[in-house]
Amino acid sequence: MASSPPPPSQVAALPRSLGVFGGVLLTLSCVTPASSLFIVVPPLLQSQGSGAVISLLVAAVLSLGVGLCYAELGTLVPSAGGEYSIVGQVLGRLAGWLVFVISIVSLLVIPPIIALGTAGYLGSVLTMDPAVAGALVMVVAVAVGVLDIKSNALITGVFLGLEVLAAAIVTVLGLTHVRQPVSTLVHAVVPDGQGGTSPFTAGLLISGLAVAIFTYNGFGTAVYLSEDLRDPRRSVARTVLWSLLAGVLVITLPVVAICLGVASPDQLAAGDLVAVVDDWAGSGVGTFVSLCIAAAILNAVIVMVIQNGRVLYASARDRTWPDPVNRALGTLHPRWGSPWVATLAIGLPGAVLALTVPIDALLGFTGVVVAVIYLLLGVAALAARRGRHRSTDAWRMPLWPLAPVLTTVVLGYTLTQQSGRDLLITLAVLAAGVLYWFAYLRPRTGTHWVLSLPADQSPTTPSPATSTAPALATTTSPEHP
Image 1 (cartoon, rainbow, N blue to C red):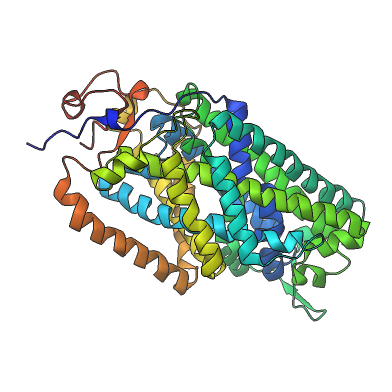
Image 2: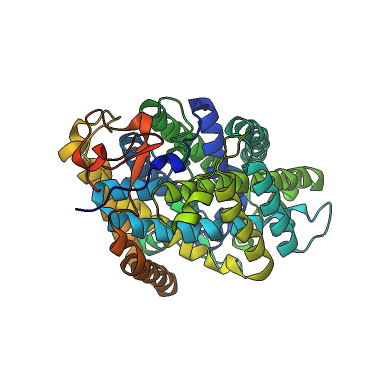
Protein backbone atom coordinates (compact mmCIF):
# COMPACT_ATOMS: atom_id res chain seq x y z
CA MET A 1 0.00 0.00 0.00
CA ALA A 2 1.36 3.44 -0.91
CA SER A 3 2.11 5.64 2.08
CA SER A 4 -0.03 8.69 2.66
CA PRO A 5 1.47 12.08 1.77
CA PRO A 6 3.21 14.17 4.41
CA PRO A 7 0.85 16.39 6.42
CA PRO A 8 -0.36 19.15 4.11
CA SER A 9 -0.31 21.63 6.98
CA GLN A 10 3.32 22.28 5.99
CA VAL A 11 1.88 24.50 3.22
CA ALA A 12 -0.45 27.18 4.56
CA ALA A 13 -3.67 28.10 2.77
CA LEU A 14 -3.97 31.38 0.86
CA PRO A 15 -6.44 33.86 2.44
CA ARG A 16 -9.70 34.30 0.47
CA SER A 17 -10.00 38.09 0.21
CA LEU A 18 -10.68 38.74 -3.48
CA GLY A 19 -14.03 39.40 -5.16
CA VAL A 20 -14.99 39.09 -8.84
CA PHE A 21 -14.25 42.76 -9.61
CA GLY A 22 -10.75 42.55 -8.13
CA GLY A 23 -10.24 39.25 -9.93
CA VAL A 24 -11.22 40.83 -13.25
CA LEU A 25 -8.81 43.73 -12.67
CA LEU A 26 -5.94 41.33 -12.04
CA THR A 27 -6.93 38.98 -14.86
CA LEU A 28 -7.44 41.73 -17.45
CA SER A 29 -4.09 43.19 -16.39
CA CYS A 30 -2.53 39.85 -17.31
CA VAL A 31 -4.28 39.93 -20.68
CA THR A 32 -2.58 43.36 -20.77
CA PRO A 33 -4.51 44.88 -23.68
CA ALA A 34 -2.12 47.75 -24.38
CA SER A 35 1.07 45.70 -24.43
CA SER A 36 -0.67 43.02 -26.51
CA LEU A 37 -1.82 45.75 -28.89
CA PHE A 38 1.59 47.40 -29.25
CA ILE A 39 3.96 44.43 -28.87
CA VAL A 40 2.21 41.26 -30.05
CA VAL A 41 -0.12 42.75 -32.70
CA PRO A 42 2.52 44.64 -34.81
CA PRO A 43 4.20 41.45 -36.11
CA LEU A 44 0.70 40.19 -36.98
CA LEU A 45 0.00 43.39 -38.93
CA GLN A 46 3.34 43.10 -40.69
CA SER A 47 2.66 39.57 -41.89
CA GLN A 48 -1.11 39.78 -42.41
CA GLY A 49 -1.94 43.44 -43.05
CA SER A 50 -5.61 44.24 -42.52
CA GLY A 51 -6.19 40.48 -42.43
CA ALA A 52 -5.00 40.70 -38.81
CA VAL A 53 -8.55 41.78 -37.91
CA ILE A 54 -9.96 38.54 -39.35
CA SER A 55 -7.29 36.53 -37.50
CA LEU A 56 -8.11 38.29 -34.24
CA LEU A 57 -11.85 37.71 -34.66
CA VAL A 58 -11.31 34.01 -35.38
CA ALA A 59 -8.95 33.88 -32.40
CA ALA A 60 -11.63 35.56 -30.26
CA VAL A 61 -14.15 32.83 -31.20
CA LEU A 62 -11.61 30.13 -30.38
CA SER A 63 -10.70 31.93 -27.16
CA LEU A 64 -14.38 31.96 -26.19
CA GLY A 65 -14.43 28.18 -26.58
CA VAL A 66 -11.28 27.99 -24.45
CA GLY A 67 -12.79 30.47 -21.99
CA LEU A 68 -15.84 28.26 -21.53
CA CYS A 69 -13.50 25.35 -20.84
CA TYR A 70 -11.55 27.45 -18.32
CA ALA A 71 -14.78 28.60 -16.66
CA GLU A 72 -16.12 25.06 -16.20
CA LEU A 73 -12.84 23.40 -15.33
CA GLY A 74 -11.72 26.23 -13.04
CA THR A 75 -14.85 25.81 -10.94
CA LEU A 76 -14.53 22.03 -11.05
CA VAL A 77 -10.89 22.14 -9.88
CA PRO A 78 -10.42 25.51 -8.09
CA SER A 79 -6.67 25.24 -7.52
CA ALA A 80 -3.87 27.82 -7.71
CA GLY A 81 -2.04 25.29 -9.86
CA GLY A 82 -4.29 26.31 -12.74
CA GLU A 83 -4.04 24.26 -15.91
CA TYR A 84 -1.68 21.60 -14.58
CA SER A 85 -3.94 20.82 -11.64
CA ILE A 86 -7.04 20.75 -13.86
CA VAL A 87 -5.49 18.48 -16.49
CA GLY A 88 -3.87 16.29 -13.85
CA GLN A 89 -7.08 15.74 -11.91
CA VAL A 90 -9.19 15.10 -15.02
CA LEU A 91 -6.79 13.36 -17.44
CA GLY A 92 -4.27 11.85 -15.06
CA ARG A 93 -1.13 12.76 -13.16
CA LEU A 94 1.35 12.32 -16.02
CA ALA A 95 -0.69 14.58 -18.31
CA GLY A 96 -0.86 17.17 -15.54
CA TRP A 97 2.88 16.92 -15.00
CA LEU A 98 3.63 17.55 -18.69
CA VAL A 99 1.34 20.59 -18.64
CA PHE A 100 3.20 21.83 -15.57
CA VAL A 101 6.58 21.38 -17.27
CA ILE A 102 5.78 23.36 -20.42
CA SER A 103 3.85 25.89 -18.34
CA ILE A 104 6.69 26.54 -15.91
CA VAL A 105 9.16 27.12 -18.77
CA SER A 106 6.78 29.55 -20.47
CA LEU A 107 6.09 31.24 -17.11
CA LEU A 108 9.82 31.84 -16.79
CA VAL A 109 10.29 33.33 -20.25
CA ILE A 110 7.05 35.22 -21.03
CA PRO A 111 7.43 37.99 -18.37
CA PRO A 112 10.97 38.98 -19.42
CA ILE A 113 9.93 38.80 -23.11
CA ILE A 114 7.20 41.33 -22.37
CA ALA A 115 9.49 43.38 -20.07
CA LEU A 116 12.13 43.77 -22.80
CA GLY A 117 9.69 45.94 -24.75
CA THR A 118 9.72 48.65 -22.07
CA ALA A 119 12.76 50.60 -23.27
CA GLY A 120 11.32 51.16 -26.74
CA TYR A 121 8.32 52.97 -25.27
CA LEU A 122 10.37 55.03 -22.83
CA GLY A 123 12.62 56.25 -25.65
CA SER A 124 10.77 59.56 -26.04
CA VAL A 125 11.68 60.62 -22.46
CA LEU A 126 14.86 58.68 -21.64
CA THR A 127 17.28 56.27 -23.23
CA MET A 128 17.85 52.88 -21.62
CA ASP A 129 19.39 49.62 -22.65
CA PRO A 130 16.47 47.24 -23.35
CA ALA A 131 18.03 44.48 -21.25
CA VAL A 132 18.54 46.79 -18.26
CA ALA A 133 15.03 48.20 -18.56
CA GLY A 134 13.59 44.68 -18.79
CA ALA A 135 15.52 43.55 -15.72
CA LEU A 136 14.35 46.59 -13.72
CA VAL A 137 10.74 45.92 -14.68
CA MET A 138 11.13 42.33 -13.48
CA VAL A 139 12.58 43.46 -10.14
CA VAL A 140 9.80 46.00 -9.56
CA ALA A 141 7.19 43.40 -10.51
CA VAL A 142 8.62 40.93 -8.01
CA ALA A 143 8.64 43.58 -5.27
CA VAL A 144 4.96 44.35 -5.90
CA GLY A 145 4.10 40.66 -6.34
CA VAL A 146 4.98 39.74 -2.75
CA LEU A 147 2.37 42.18 -1.38
CA ASP A 148 -1.11 41.04 -0.36
CA ILE A 149 -3.61 40.32 -3.14
CA LYS A 150 -5.84 43.33 -2.37
CA SER A 151 -2.90 45.70 -2.75
CA ASN A 152 -1.98 43.93 -5.98
CA ALA A 153 -5.53 44.43 -7.32
CA LEU A 154 -5.46 48.15 -6.45
CA ILE A 155 -2.05 48.78 -8.03
CA THR A 156 -2.80 46.83 -11.18
CA GLY A 157 -6.22 48.50 -11.42
CA VAL A 158 -4.57 51.94 -11.63
CA PHE A 159 -2.19 50.76 -14.35
CA LEU A 160 -5.05 49.04 -16.16
CA GLY A 161 -6.89 52.38 -16.31
CA LEU A 162 -3.91 53.85 -18.19
CA GLU A 163 -3.93 50.88 -20.58
CA VAL A 164 -7.60 51.26 -21.41
CA LEU A 165 -7.11 55.00 -21.87
CA ALA A 166 -4.28 54.41 -24.36
CA ALA A 167 -6.37 51.88 -26.30
CA ALA A 168 -9.32 54.28 -26.32
CA ILE A 169 -7.17 57.12 -27.66
CA VAL A 170 -5.90 54.92 -30.49
CA THR A 171 -9.44 53.80 -31.31
CA VAL A 172 -10.88 57.33 -31.39
CA LEU A 173 -7.96 58.70 -33.42
CA GLY A 174 -8.13 55.87 -35.94
CA LEU A 175 -11.89 56.15 -36.42
CA THR A 176 -11.67 59.93 -36.86
CA HIS A 177 -8.87 59.62 -39.44
CA VAL A 178 -10.33 56.90 -41.68
CA ARG A 179 -8.33 56.68 -44.90
CA GLN A 180 -8.94 53.08 -45.97
CA PRO A 181 -12.26 51.63 -47.16
CA VAL A 182 -14.16 49.43 -44.71
CA SER A 183 -14.01 46.70 -47.36
CA THR A 184 -10.31 46.19 -46.53
CA LEU A 185 -11.44 44.50 -43.31
CA VAL A 186 -13.44 41.92 -45.28
CA HIS A 187 -11.35 41.68 -48.45
CA ALA A 188 -8.09 41.98 -46.59
CA VAL A 189 -4.77 42.80 -48.22
CA VAL A 190 -1.22 42.04 -47.13
CA PRO A 191 1.40 44.76 -47.78
CA ASP A 192 4.77 43.79 -49.22
CA GLY A 193 6.55 46.87 -47.82
CA GLN A 194 7.26 48.23 -51.30
CA GLY A 195 3.91 49.75 -52.13
CA GLY A 196 2.31 46.53 -53.36
CA THR A 197 -0.19 44.18 -51.79
CA SER A 198 -1.32 40.58 -52.05
CA PRO A 199 -4.59 38.92 -50.99
CA PHE A 200 -5.05 37.52 -47.50
CA THR A 201 -5.30 33.73 -47.76
CA ALA A 202 -6.56 30.92 -45.55
CA GLY A 203 -2.97 29.74 -45.19
CA LEU A 204 -1.94 33.10 -43.73
CA LEU A 205 -4.90 32.96 -41.37
CA ILE A 206 -3.95 29.53 -40.06
CA SER A 207 -0.25 30.39 -39.74
CA GLY A 208 -1.05 33.47 -37.65
CA LEU A 209 -3.66 31.92 -35.37
CA ALA A 210 -1.22 30.85 -32.65
CA VAL A 211 0.05 34.42 -32.28
CA ALA A 212 -3.49 35.84 -32.56
CA ILE A 213 -4.67 33.52 -29.77
CA PHE A 214 -1.63 34.51 -27.71
CA THR A 215 -2.77 38.14 -28.07
CA TYR A 216 -5.76 37.41 -25.83
CA ASN A 217 -3.87 35.03 -23.58
CA GLY A 218 -4.19 35.79 -19.88
CA PHE A 219 -7.91 35.41 -19.23
CA GLY A 220 -7.09 32.02 -17.70
CA THR A 221 -5.31 33.88 -14.88
CA ALA A 222 -8.63 33.66 -13.01
CA VAL A 223 -8.00 29.96 -12.33
CA TYR A 224 -4.63 30.79 -10.74
CA LEU A 225 -6.49 33.17 -8.42
CA SER A 226 -9.11 30.59 -7.46
CA GLU A 227 -7.59 30.16 -3.99
CA ASP A 228 -7.67 33.94 -3.44
CA LEU A 229 -11.26 34.35 -4.72
CA ARG A 230 -14.24 34.12 -2.42
CA ASP A 231 -16.72 31.38 -3.40
CA PRO A 232 -14.52 30.15 -6.30
CA ARG A 233 -17.06 27.63 -7.62
CA ARG A 234 -19.14 30.64 -8.69
CA SER A 235 -16.66 33.50 -9.06
CA VAL A 236 -14.00 31.80 -11.21
CA ALA A 237 -16.35 31.39 -14.20
CA ARG A 238 -17.54 35.00 -13.98
CA THR A 239 -13.98 36.29 -13.72
CA VAL A 240 -12.82 34.28 -16.75
CA LEU A 241 -15.66 35.28 -19.07
CA TRP A 242 -15.84 38.97 -18.13
CA SER A 243 -12.06 39.29 -18.50
CA LEU A 244 -12.10 37.62 -21.91
CA LEU A 245 -14.90 39.86 -23.19
CA ALA A 246 -13.17 43.01 -21.98
CA GLY A 247 -9.84 41.90 -23.44
CA VAL A 248 -11.31 41.16 -26.88
CA LEU A 249 -12.98 44.58 -27.04
CA VAL A 250 -9.99 46.57 -25.77
CA ILE A 251 -7.58 44.86 -28.19
CA THR A 252 -9.67 44.32 -31.33
CA LEU A 253 -11.36 47.72 -31.62
CA PRO A 254 -8.04 49.65 -31.79
CA VAL A 255 -6.73 47.19 -34.42
CA VAL A 256 -9.82 47.87 -36.55
CA ALA A 257 -9.25 51.60 -36.13
CA ILE A 258 -5.56 51.27 -37.06
CA CYS A 259 -6.31 49.29 -40.21
CA LEU A 260 -8.85 51.91 -41.31
CA GLY A 261 -6.80 54.94 -40.29
CA VAL A 262 -3.36 54.24 -41.79
CA ALA A 263 -2.37 56.38 -44.77
CA SER A 264 -1.33 53.25 -46.71
CA PRO A 265 -0.94 49.51 -46.11
CA ASP A 266 2.83 50.06 -45.97
CA GLN A 267 2.36 51.63 -42.52
CA LEU A 268 1.06 48.27 -41.36
CA ALA A 269 4.12 46.58 -42.89
CA ALA A 270 6.36 48.89 -40.84
CA GLY A 271 4.70 47.72 -37.62
CA ASP A 272 5.40 51.02 -35.78
CA LEU A 273 2.06 51.86 -34.21
CA VAL A 274 3.42 54.80 -32.19
CA ALA A 275 4.48 56.39 -35.49
CA VAL A 276 0.91 55.90 -36.71
CA VAL A 277 -0.38 57.73 -33.62
CA ASP A 278 2.18 60.52 -34.19
CA ASP A 279 0.89 60.83 -37.74
CA TRP A 280 -2.67 61.23 -36.46
CA ALA A 281 -2.21 63.52 -33.46
CA GLY A 282 1.40 64.67 -33.15
CA SER A 283 4.36 63.56 -31.07
CA GLY A 284 2.88 64.77 -27.76
CA VAL A 285 0.00 62.32 -27.91
CA GLY A 286 2.35 59.66 -29.23
CA THR A 287 4.63 60.18 -26.23
CA PHE A 288 1.70 59.90 -23.82
CA VAL A 289 0.54 56.68 -25.47
CA SER A 290 4.10 55.34 -25.34
CA LEU A 291 4.30 55.97 -21.60
CA CYS A 292 0.92 54.30 -21.10
CA ILE A 293 2.27 51.28 -22.96
CA ALA A 294 5.35 51.21 -20.72
CA ALA A 295 3.01 51.25 -17.70
CA ALA A 296 0.96 48.49 -19.31
CA ILE A 297 4.07 46.33 -19.72
CA LEU A 298 4.96 46.79 -16.06
CA ASN A 299 1.36 45.99 -15.12
CA ALA A 300 1.33 42.81 -17.19
CA VAL A 301 4.61 41.62 -15.73
CA ILE A 302 3.37 42.29 -12.17
CA VAL A 303 0.29 40.12 -12.69
CA MET A 304 2.29 37.40 -14.43
CA VAL A 305 4.69 37.27 -11.50
CA ILE A 306 1.72 37.07 -9.10
CA GLN A 307 0.11 34.17 -10.98
CA ASN A 308 3.41 32.41 -11.60
CA GLY A 309 4.28 32.53 -7.92
CA ARG A 310 0.98 30.84 -7.13
CA VAL A 311 1.65 28.08 -9.64
CA LEU A 312 5.01 27.38 -8.02
CA TYR A 313 3.38 27.55 -4.57
CA ALA A 314 0.78 24.98 -5.69
CA SER A 315 3.55 22.71 -7.03
CA ALA A 316 5.13 22.76 -3.56
CA ARG A 317 1.81 21.83 -1.96
CA ASP A 318 1.58 18.97 -4.48
CA ARG A 319 5.06 17.81 -3.42
CA THR A 320 6.75 18.21 -6.78
CA TRP A 321 10.25 18.80 -5.38
CA PRO A 322 12.45 17.46 -2.57
CA ASP A 323 10.81 18.21 0.79
CA PRO A 324 13.08 21.14 1.84
CA VAL A 325 12.24 22.88 -1.45
CA ASN A 326 8.54 22.17 -0.99
CA ARG A 327 8.58 23.70 2.49
CA ALA A 328 10.35 26.82 1.27
CA LEU A 329 8.14 27.37 -1.79
CA GLY A 330 5.01 26.76 0.30
CA THR A 331 5.84 29.55 2.77
CA LEU A 332 3.38 32.44 3.06
CA HIS A 333 4.43 35.93 4.15
CA PRO A 334 3.31 36.46 7.77
CA ARG A 335 1.91 39.93 7.04
CA TRP A 336 0.76 39.87 3.42
CA GLY A 337 -0.34 36.25 3.10
CA SER A 338 1.43 35.94 -0.25
CA PRO A 339 3.61 33.00 -1.39
CA TRP A 340 6.64 35.26 -1.27
CA VAL A 341 9.40 32.65 -1.60
CA ALA A 342 7.73 31.11 -4.66
CA THR A 343 7.21 34.60 -6.13
CA LEU A 344 10.90 35.43 -5.70
CA ALA A 345 11.92 32.03 -7.08
CA ILE A 346 9.89 32.41 -10.30
CA GLY A 347 10.36 36.16 -10.76
CA LEU A 348 14.01 36.97 -10.08
CA PRO A 349 15.38 34.50 -12.70
CA GLY A 350 13.38 36.53 -15.24
CA ALA A 351 15.51 39.57 -14.39
CA VAL A 352 18.64 37.53 -15.04
CA LEU A 353 17.23 36.19 -18.33
CA ALA A 354 16.36 39.72 -19.48
CA LEU A 355 19.97 40.79 -18.88
CA THR A 356 21.77 37.81 -20.35
CA VAL A 357 19.68 35.79 -22.84
CA PRO A 358 18.03 36.81 -26.17
CA ILE A 359 14.75 35.27 -25.00
CA ASP A 360 12.59 37.43 -27.28
CA ALA A 361 13.44 34.81 -29.93
CA LEU A 362 11.20 32.41 -27.96
CA LEU A 363 7.95 34.28 -28.69
CA GLY A 364 6.93 31.64 -31.23
CA PHE A 365 7.60 28.89 -28.70
CA THR A 366 5.31 30.56 -26.17
CA GLY A 367 2.55 30.66 -28.79
CA VAL A 368 2.93 26.90 -29.34
CA VAL A 369 2.86 26.28 -25.57
CA VAL A 370 -0.37 28.26 -25.21
CA ALA A 371 -1.94 26.29 -28.08
CA VAL A 372 -0.87 22.94 -26.54
CA ILE A 373 -2.29 23.86 -23.13
CA TYR A 374 -5.55 25.11 -24.64
CA LEU A 375 -5.87 21.89 -26.64
CA LEU A 376 -5.40 19.76 -23.50
CA LEU A 377 -7.97 21.89 -21.67
CA GLY A 378 -10.39 21.14 -24.49
CA VAL A 379 -9.75 17.41 -24.05
CA ALA A 380 -10.15 17.79 -20.26
CA ALA A 381 -13.48 19.59 -20.76
CA LEU A 382 -14.70 16.63 -22.84
CA ALA A 383 -13.72 14.23 -20.05
CA ALA A 384 -14.90 16.36 -17.13
CA ARG A 385 -18.49 15.12 -17.06
CA ARG A 386 -17.76 11.52 -16.22
CA GLY A 387 -17.18 9.67 -12.96
CA ARG A 388 -16.93 11.73 -9.81
CA HIS A 389 -16.65 14.96 -11.85
CA ARG A 390 -20.24 14.54 -13.04
CA SER A 391 -21.65 15.22 -9.56
CA THR A 392 -19.25 17.98 -8.52
CA ASP A 393 -20.87 21.36 -7.87
CA ALA A 394 -19.45 23.46 -10.72
CA TRP A 395 -20.50 25.99 -13.35
CA ARG A 396 -21.38 24.19 -16.59
CA MET A 397 -20.87 25.65 -20.05
CA PRO A 398 -23.81 25.93 -22.48
CA LEU A 399 -23.95 23.79 -25.64
CA TRP A 400 -21.43 21.27 -24.33
CA PRO A 401 -19.53 19.58 -26.03
CA LEU A 402 -19.49 22.09 -28.93
CA ALA A 403 -16.85 24.43 -27.45
CA PRO A 404 -14.30 21.76 -26.41
CA VAL A 405 -14.71 19.82 -29.66
CA LEU A 406 -14.19 22.94 -31.78
CA THR A 407 -11.27 24.04 -29.64
CA THR A 408 -9.55 20.67 -29.81
CA VAL A 409 -9.95 20.17 -33.57
CA VAL A 410 -8.91 23.69 -34.62
CA LEU A 411 -5.96 23.94 -32.25
CA GLY A 412 -4.76 20.47 -33.20
CA TYR A 413 -4.66 21.52 -36.85
CA THR A 414 -3.12 24.89 -35.96
CA LEU A 415 -0.21 23.17 -34.23
CA THR A 416 0.61 21.26 -37.41
CA GLN A 417 1.14 24.58 -39.17
CA GLN A 418 3.60 26.07 -36.69
CA SER A 419 7.36 26.49 -37.06
CA GLY A 420 9.34 23.25 -36.82
CA ARG A 421 11.85 25.00 -34.56
CA ASP A 422 9.19 26.04 -32.05
CA LEU A 423 7.67 22.55 -32.08
CA LEU A 424 11.10 20.99 -31.48
CA ILE A 425 11.76 23.30 -28.52
CA THR A 426 8.40 22.28 -27.04
CA LEU A 427 9.18 18.58 -27.56
CA ALA A 428 12.60 19.02 -25.94
CA VAL A 429 11.02 20.62 -22.87
CA LEU A 430 8.46 17.80 -22.65
CA ALA A 431 11.24 15.20 -22.98
CA ALA A 432 13.09 16.77 -20.04
CA GLY A 433 9.86 16.62 -18.06
CA VAL A 434 9.39 12.93 -18.87
CA LEU A 435 12.92 12.22 -17.60
CA TYR A 436 12.19 13.95 -14.26
CA TRP A 437 8.91 12.06 -14.01
CA PHE A 438 10.51 8.63 -14.38
CA ALA A 439 13.67 9.46 -12.45
CA TYR A 440 12.15 11.22 -9.43
CA LEU A 441 8.35 11.47 -9.27
CA ARG A 442 7.17 8.05 -10.41
CA PRO A 443 9.26 6.13 -7.83
CA ARG A 444 7.68 8.37 -5.14
CA THR A 445 4.08 8.09 -6.30
CA GLY A 446 2.70 7.75 -2.78
CA THR A 447 4.30 10.91 -1.41
CA HIS A 448 5.05 13.24 -4.36
CA TRP A 449 3.04 14.93 -7.12
CA VAL A 450 -0.08 14.43 -5.02
CA LEU A 451 -2.57 16.69 -6.81
CA SER A 452 -4.59 18.59 -4.28
CA LEU A 453 -7.30 21.16 -3.59
CA PRO A 454 -7.70 23.62 -0.72
CA ALA A 455 -9.45 22.01 2.24
CA ASP A 456 -12.48 24.30 1.93
CA GLN A 457 -13.05 23.03 -1.65
CA SER A 458 -12.60 19.34 -0.88
CA PRO A 459 -15.29 16.80 -1.78
CA THR A 460 -17.86 16.41 0.99
CA THR A 461 -17.56 12.64 0.96
CA PRO A 462 -13.99 11.45 1.64
CA SER A 463 -12.61 8.64 -0.45
CA PRO A 464 -10.04 6.05 0.54
CA ALA A 465 -7.33 8.15 -1.10
CA THR A 466 -8.09 11.19 1.06
CA SER A 467 -9.36 9.78 4.34
CA THR A 468 -5.87 8.89 5.58
CA ALA A 469 -4.45 12.41 5.24
CA PRO A 470 -5.42 15.29 7.55
CA ALA A 471 -7.52 17.90 5.72
CA LEU A 472 -5.81 21.01 7.08
CA ALA A 473 -4.53 23.06 4.17
CA THR A 474 -5.18 20.77 1.26
CA THR A 475 -6.84 17.55 0.23
CA THR A 476 -5.52 15.09 -2.29
CA SER A 477 -7.42 14.24 -5.42
CA PRO A 478 -9.73 11.26 -4.87
CA GLU A 479 -9.18 10.01 -8.41
CA HIS A 480 -5.41 10.32 -8.50
CA PRO A 481 -3.88 9.39 -5.11
